[in-house]
Length: 367
Image 1 (cartoon, rainbow, N blue to C red):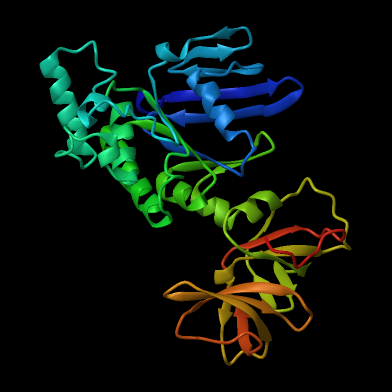
Image 2: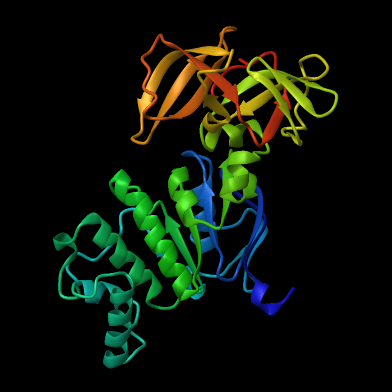
């Protein structure tokens, strides 16, 4: 492996338990220098505990963690957090209220001379877009500005790895994605390797090069945002990332999948292959995303509008097919229909993802 692509962080079969409760279960992933990753999952899945293990705040019950090829955690051995050169940005910002912005950013720079410290603080405040806020105090700043100060403080000592624990969750929804993009740009400019923990997929998509979806202490899939959405490996990932429904279908010869909505033809991806097939031969559940179901007044297939969610340029419709199967459809908002109306729909799916038919589950349940 060339030096430029050397792993900065390696997590190998990491296990962590609180008493009898296993929170992290044989987790493994690798992060290259300069890469930005995200641990995405619901509350209680183990993502924050994993972050704390990487930081050195929690021990490893099994497996190991390496930084720059050096073991920093394994059972019975743990390099202290302050010796790992890891920066942390927390959900509550954790700024010192009695210190100015400059005092907060320069807090970890005691080893530098006053002039060097002042120069570093000015450089970072410029980088985070707060060059005129050095003399202000945290209570005089907005939430987004406070988060920028917390980021500048974490970056000030030049950490080799930056960990961000739900850093945008206290901000307004509209600000989260924008700030995530701004922070990503800054980290890429600085060449900083980072790991974000979040439950918000929009933050993850805006922020990360690669995303690990966590479920019950394991990484269900480590992939790009595109593949998580279009090529989920199991039902949990399909359900957690994006919106969609599982629709019953039958795989026939020639790479065709027959659905109530029509016929899909092309390369078929079989997900959840380890799960038992409880339906008959060829019976599958097909994942349909809202953009796979297109409004078409000329289509012979009609669906009844159950509900609608206006999203500005688009409307997300929940539709019921004649069989009772429900699907979602994302439609340009000038097609404005009321609940109860029947509209024409057709398939327009580029990715055919099928799952083993599970007869003990609702085949038309939301994904």
